[in-house]
Length: 405
Picture 1 (cartoon, helix red, strand yellow):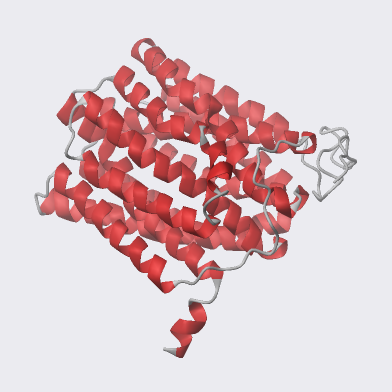
Picture 2: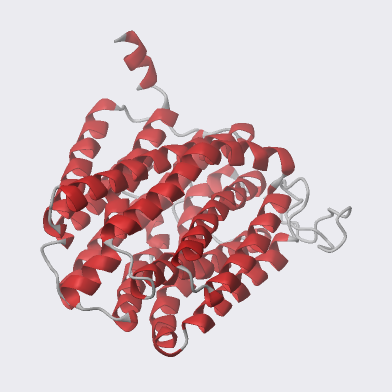
């Protein structure tokens, strides 16, 4: 009992608990989505693209989180947003038609994006700079374990138990909501070490972080929407097969994410992100030409593993940021991340109807832009050393942008 009381007084354990709940619920929504919309709502690439664009609209509006913080504490806001995500997922199976799916998706997405915004802010505030990368790796491992639990449950309950889409969604959302209520009661309100700005905030010296965030959002849509949709439409993967593929993804994350976090802390953000983007260029080009379902599955797993290196973007920002800017910038960065995300799924959904290959070539282009930006990260990012003077001279780490506090 004493050990339990000691754990509940440490904010990192609340972060890990929330990191468990979100993927348990959201992974069920993701894993079932493509099969659900094709089988029950007869979606094509155009409808799935539009649905994903609707899903990203709340992300585009994530900057409004800073205004909610005028009346709610960040910890309370995070738990409320997590609860709303659970409700949205629980309702999904009851509306197997186009308008209904759009509505439940928006409800789920509002909770998801507000939670991710505030959760990122709390993580960067509550963790020291020297421990942040390793802890984010631990968070990814916890998320991977939660996702494995979700996908394993789908495989057992739906493939072997005959559970319907409707009740699978209800089970995931309901269980998540019960856990959130438990977290609300168990953990105290943790103090914040600095008062966060409660207004919209964009600083010139954060421009590189903003640009990396923008292309990350654009590139992520190719993976989230079209790589997954390809598995179902082109290769005919069943719900069980998609779930098994996701299980493999998260086994890799569970095994390697903490090591990736420690590795990023050792080699630095620039090198880690450079390797990530080079790898993603190769993966996206390969997607365009793949014709074997097993090779496609391997590419999907490699793609997912590369995204674990995105920890480097967050730790880069933590090293250059004013601590008071973190909450406001988290909201702004999520909005920037979703500028392209709101438009790209719908537009590329139309492109998909005539040329799926072109969709993946565009994704490779986004990864190339990210690579050029990553070369601008200095070897030792810090206040006053946000950007390199010449990104093509590896020994030169002088800043070109300096702003007064």
